[in-house]
Length: 281
View 1: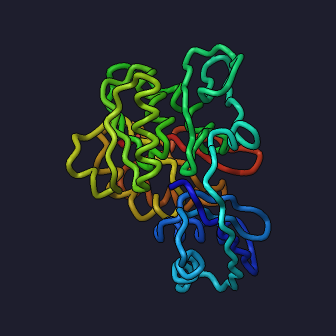
View 2 (view 1 turned 90 degrees about the horizontal axis):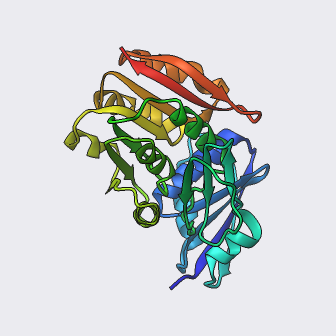
């Protein structure tokens, strides 16, 4: 069954903090992917007769005073890869270093690290500023023989790149089941032996401490879980954090400082999305 409900959520007022937080609340309720815009966001969930009720319940205790207008449209099953090829997913190229593309792309640029993905509705293609920024940081990390944990691995792009760059052990942790299953598929497509765990930050306690930890998630989750991230990282290890805006850096750094994490580098996009590199002292 490949049918979906397309749930439109208009927010009054609307800003990026509201759409980011609404997406997080909806994800907890089972929604799989999101398209934010200036008036709210569009969310997708596998077809269910109570999609509107689920959205209303998920946003009922929203912490920012906001009025939500919710409507639902049924989307009949289709070839999602064909839709991505036609409307959304184009190869992502970072210099001559990384090319992220799908199996349906032809004549892709040659790159040192060629990553093949077939995104489903639970997608993470690398087009978002934060994913591209994280890849740029990863290209500058000495990963040969290092152990890596990728929190919120999504469809596995960052974990796969780390393995391609010589990391000895790479573990990706993802709470969303469709994304987790897609990441397993992508690890196979790229012949990269990445360990994948369906879970959240609570899974970290069972893992050996890592040389590097990535978390491209969102501000609120990072602030909530930074203690567990720090505990999972070796002294002298590197942490990459993204999924938030430049204006959020002070609160992120304040939280990180409590656990001996000090910023050593940052990238900021034109849209003010930010990716930090920190070292555990």
